[in-house]
Image (cartoon, rainbow, N blue to C red):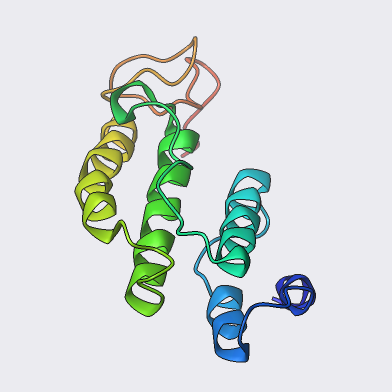
Length: 137
């Protein structure tokens, strides 16, 4: 949060309340993509430009698990901000409609219904390799 605070301090057009809200966004700063999304949003809010949903890439049904999880995090953070800064995040209804397909994509991966890697077999986790996991009794 301190890294975010120093970034936000450099934004001249943001009120203290807006800086606080942007610092508290539930979006990981330990991930390059998510941190980049956050930075893009901060710059747009600072310039007074409404934030759209252009951060979404691809389609849920084609997305890898990590991409689908990031999309869900971004959409929830967008919705979180849309309640607090509706003039800057005006596409809340569209975002709400997009959450379910992305959550479903994550769910399909976790249930084993989507291919995640070359050694993937139905019903086994992506990290499972025959013989790699041995039971010890």
